[in-house]
Image (tube, rainbow, N blue to C red; front, side):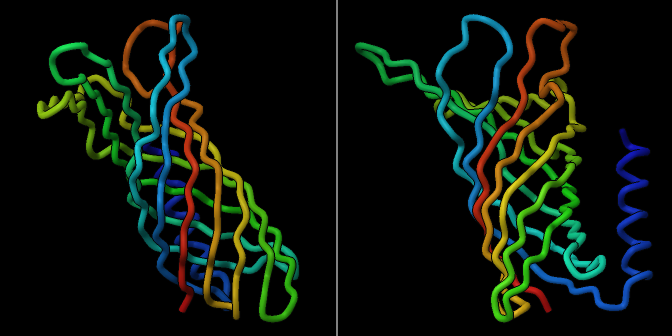
Length: 200
C-alpha cells in the first residue's frame, strides 16, 4: 500500500510538470462521518461531525475532463450513547483523523461563469490519530487499526468564475478499519463532505 501511495504522489507531481494550464488552490469544509458494519448484532451509531482542509490542483484534459488531485487532512469517526438510568450516560466516540489523497476525475460542463463538475475518485488515506473516547477517558488505539485505507468518492462541484469551488460528495471505504483476524466482521468508513475552495 505504501508503494501505491508513493506512485500516486509521483504521478500527481508528474502531471504538474506536464500541463501548462494547471491551477492550484485551497479547500476546506464539514464532515459527517460514520461506519458500516458487516457483521450481525449491529448497533445504531451517530455521525461524527468534523472538518477537512487541504490543497487541490486542477489539470484540464481536453475540453470536457479535469483531473483534480487533493491532499486533505480529514476527521473521521462515529459515536454511540448507552442510556443509564441512574448514573451519567456512557458516550463512546471513535476519532480517526487521516491524511487523504483522492484523485478526482471530473466532467467539466462549462457555462461561462459557472461550470458544473460531477466526479468520481479513488482515494488513499493514512490514519494519523486513532482514539476511543469514553466520556472523559481517552484511549489510544493506533495499534488496533489498519492505518492505510482505500476507498472511493463521488459527488458534484460547482466552479464559479473559474476560481471558487462549492461542492458535496459521498465517501465510502473499501478496507477494514480494524486490524484483526476475523474475516466475517469488518468496519468501513462512510461519510458526507461539504466544502468550499478557491483556485489561484
